[in-house]
Length: 314
Image (cartoon, rainbow, N blue to C red; front, top):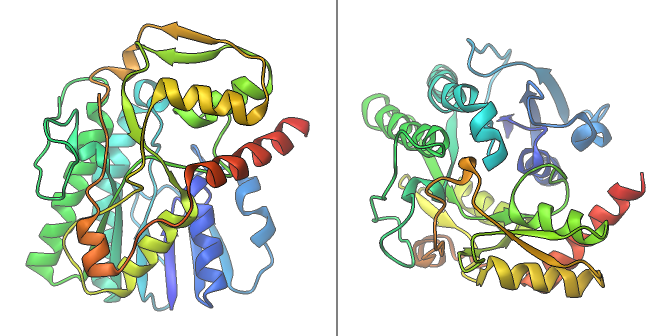
């Protein structure tokens, strides 16, 4: 296939480029490097299967030649970005999704939207299945991301119903791994960077809030199976391994051999309405895609810690 990957220089996007090239596909990576990093894709420059376009997907998009698939991954996704990049996040969720869907329609290409577990907000049900409609504060600090993705899902399904675009929607639960930014602001890069540099690990609140953590390699395997399926409705992809933030911090301290302490802080404004629990119901993925995660937290965290060590040595 010949495919366009928006946000292709980001943490997940760059790994997606790697996977698709490894599977024999031709990849056009589109990124304006707002949060993506050139070093994530530097190894692909010069590869005949790879093309880079430095461009903002919220503008009109033109791509020469045929396209078989569009994967719309572009969007800042870290809580630290919600305050500073809120309007940019809303624009890429709304305008970026509209422009990429228009391109899919024009090219008769299949379309995949990377949505998020944040569409469920601070959930009132646990675990969260795709049928749960969510508990989201549209005007809170997190609303710029939550509502951008909810709108993107609505737009995607409208193009499917009204224009017949063949779409896929993946709802991504907390994912981690190599190539995350050190200043990403999410728990695992924060904890690992702090532990490796001997700083206190910052735990917000009392640390009882939970997340399910999925290594990026499992996520990508699930997304690829979804791409090749005929499932048009949203599918949760995540690891149903649930851990509190306090226990995660302790685990990372132990795995790094750090002498760091754990420091408790009040939730910052960007964490407003921070979900107290997050756990995917992956019944749909297991049933329809025959997918389940394979990388356990110890193995995934080991790989991530080793990568961060090398980054800090640069």
